Image (cartoon, rainbow, N blue to C red; front, side, top):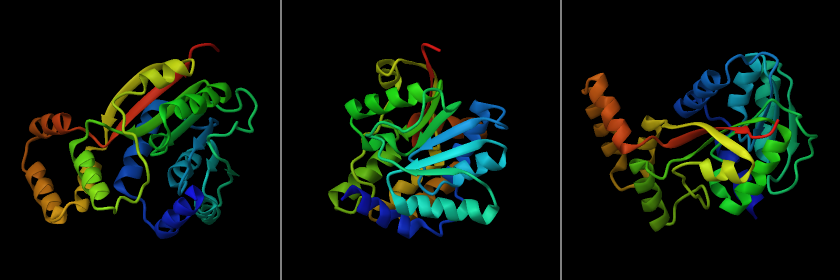
Length: 243
């Protein structure tokens, strides 16, 4: 049943263009990973695969795994159009991953782990730690006001399209229980959090007003405002405790 839901979702997103949140995640990964050329990188829960494609174009050797075959088909289409090679696997993250220890330099994901319970996340991250010494993950921020209000409204009205989600404040506990250490963490994608206002009646107009308001603030005021409201995503980097 879950596979059908995500296949239908990715069917609708097949022709979506590169967007702001993809750019945000891509830029954070570039900054935090550093040199990409020659790095073996696994995206766990790859969705459209567009960000991994950009990493591959930067010289990384990428592998994509996803629960949805439709998502993988979309990914393959993007890679084929660009003439870029990658490995693709239809895998449920709840299962043991079919990769040897230390197969990758990095495992990363975005918008994936919030669909699992803490117990499931710990099991999954133990697998990540087994196959790579470094993990980067982006998860919905429990302190993101616009995201939380939009999600709450959509759920009340029965129109939330993304299934069960558990937003987080920190991934420190998950890393610790997975024999990893939280090395860096901060929230980002503030402007993307405003998009969730579309789930509120009149939210489209409200979104425009908020963006207009932000544009009229100076840089320091805008940063203070975004810090108080909270970005949509929490970025967390974990490293394996034992090498």
